[in-house]
Image (cartoon, rainbow, N blue to C red; front, side, top):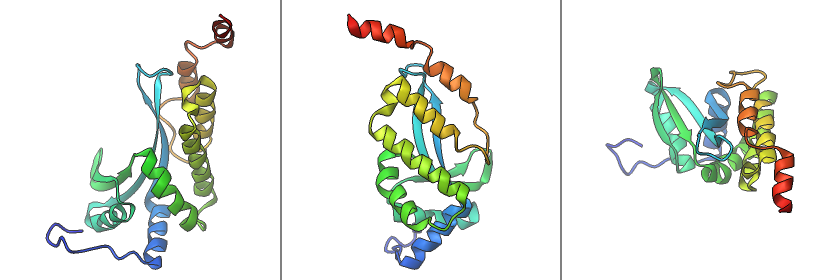
Length: 181
């Protein structure tokens, strides 16, 4: 929507939804980020994110996606001001708005993106169920997240580094002894 015409509204048709699915297939991504947070119990904050990228000349496409999902923000891509990023980082919004859309409209995408999306959904469900509150749950989420990187961009941190940080103060024997006391 342009600021010039506040009455402008996105007309959501079935055609638009399929168009948006194609835009996401080509220019979108999903990610499970491990943000280093020293005060976090296991050293990392696990954070799902959804993105669509577009040249600044096509901002309207990102505005339409933002209007459709009813959340998110648009900002320049760090390091490349000519590219804009539409980002949804609210786990609740991703679970309630993004994943149902992708389930229904991303049926014809690439096998890699389909696999990554299934893993993404599984991780979101694990987070919703509190898996991130235990070392074993964290390790399961790390394994799942790192299973999506075979054909794409490599992660900032090696998997072993994340695992070592999660396990730094955890030994099964010490937990078992503590629980007995």
